[in-house]
Length: 565
Image 1 (cartoon, rainbow, N blue to C red):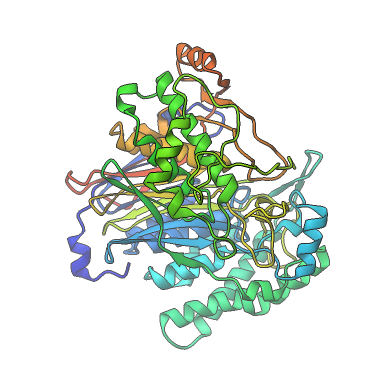
Image 2: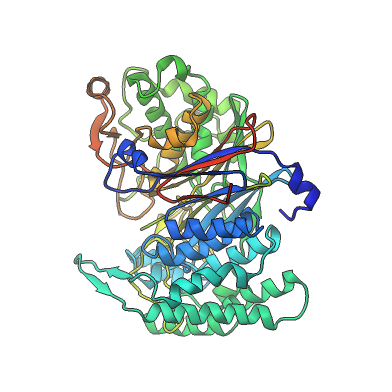
């Protein structure tokens, strides 16, 4: 994303953006109260307005989308402390306009390397949210990687606005305890975290060498220096299993996204270390249906998309995991042959009431001898586009932990290891150094090789269900982002939970209250167990691009900001 002045002048992408993260209101009500921003120099849509403003300021000063993403991520780790923390993780897809290529960044921490720790989990299960379910903090290395590989600014510049928030006292953070009470952690964590971040700035400033070498010094001090020493001491004091060697081993992986072509568009997702490819499986199945003829939110449309999501999520639960540890049959799952044998499982008049993963290795529509699964957070959103046509979709999270700030570092860990399981033989079973299969799942859509849509959704297992509908809103029904995010959505819990001891709710269907009553009755007649949601289903942030219009950016949502006119 390092662009020469000539490359910068050559970019002519035109965009409209919308972000929505308003709980407790319907989609349509939320859309009416959303902010609107327009301009020619880029858009930032985030889960919180200060973070969106900080990302926008970076764009206004000449930074690119990677710079703005980094600054906004650091801000979100403070301003959305209940949903995202610097001790958490994120999935990112980034389109580099100079390379004309998309990259997926896998910023997820791993389980402890100590085999004795893994034996403890296998014997005792995954604790709900204490320090033993904390993965290695992934956010600092993600920020360094974004700046090193794609950005133009220093870590000091990126973190400066966040330090200003912390110095002012920052938001108060509460720990939710098991009995429902809240413990005020006070103001100390803000000052402690500010001190830790200034140590990272100090490492960058004191290091000699190139910009990349100085940025690497930031990650080295956090993961392999005195900050890692402090974290290890805290882990030991709290009975946690992470150690300094776990921190030292951490890296942000950069990979090619998984993609499919759908109706002439290329849809990109992160790999099977997330739930993302399930959305692509859904699109392959939906190619065989005339969704436009069915009509948006008609009984046929909701029924068909829901049944497709059930099949895709069954495969997610059966096969997706850390691909460094298991062979995920991704090519087979997205193949034409497999799609053709799975599609006939969808009965147009009857809702499925069973889990039906397929067998892509044997090319069977339903796998025989299914496992008997025992029934044993938070996330926010960020999408960015700059004036040069670079686009980023990021889904950051810090799945809530009750462990509190780590000693004097101010670093608050998540509890993402809860997304691993202890089922012997399962691809997502915990192992030393293994990363959990996570729900964090941003998406990009390209048209003629150019960025067309960026999507980030909060909502755990709902993320790619909502994301699939947003892709369909855009491609099938020609909606821009503001309309798509405000369109009623639906979801099913007909899957294994990604967050611990909760089995599938077979046949379940949650719909927004704006779905017509007649449609709901027909869905119930087909066997769906319908429940209503007064709030939005999946909190979405979305940027859409009008590639044929004059260069102009427009953003709307609870935290959408433009980078000048």
